[in-house]
Image 1 (cartoon, one colour):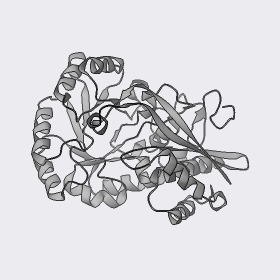
Image 2 (cartoon, helix red, strand yellow):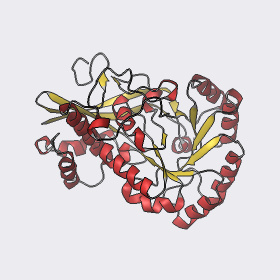
Image 3 (cartoon, helix red, strand yellow):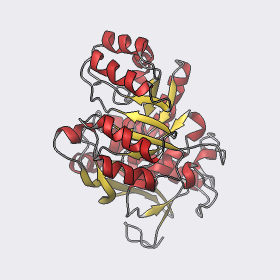
Image 4 (cartoon, one colour):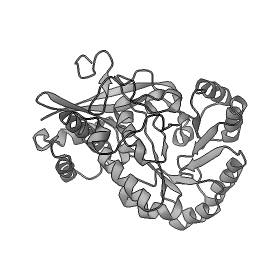
Length: 357
């Protein structure tokens, strides 16, 4: 087995701003990821490690961990054993571990000549699963432009956590008065009273479906429980839910959780977290970062096991080097995917690793 990895910069179609970026004066036009390829003889598996300031995952830290990996101790025939080996190298580093896990699943499913959703007994149903489309914090004028561009998507996710939040929601409603909207505060509201005030305002909209992470993950448990008991809208924990170990606490203070492969260490960890959440009676959403079609498609293989999807990171960029699951009108589909096995991901033109797609 050999392990290759390389940084790749993704160009955003619009400046991307969430609450933390707004507080620091602006967003970003570029997102960095680290692409991974595992190869054993003629079989190769692809993976991806997104960067995240919130989770202290940088290109440098991801590559530092990957340099520790002895690829001879990884095997497409033993994914659990391979992941156990990664845990012996260093704690945390879930983005890098995610990339390796996804590449292992891709390679193992290719060896079995099956799509990953069949190889892992996950299943997948066409014309069933819808992803939301994200609208970052911006000026009302830009919000109207973004919402108009997102007209084909039946569900929007609006980022909030800046002084112009009310104006931005009003701008969205000027373009689409009734579309379902999910709101993501990204830990923006610092007190339970402030958060409740925003939730009550959002509840009056009539078509806001849920609110993600209204307060910081570090908020005292009793304040989060207080807010859950009074919220007019379902609350989903994102930054509060790293993996399955957080589910019991999240069940006390949220109605649902957001599961991301970057947080759980890949597909197998995400499945474990989804199962734990279901057993705890929580609603679930699979989310993403700004990513290529490698990781977005990896998340799509889990669609049967979640209530909601927010896997649009590849739709927000202009230079995705891969193609995989599609999201026409928001519907996640493998119907037009030409790669029949593994993740069902294929490079567009020239692969970043230097091989024709």
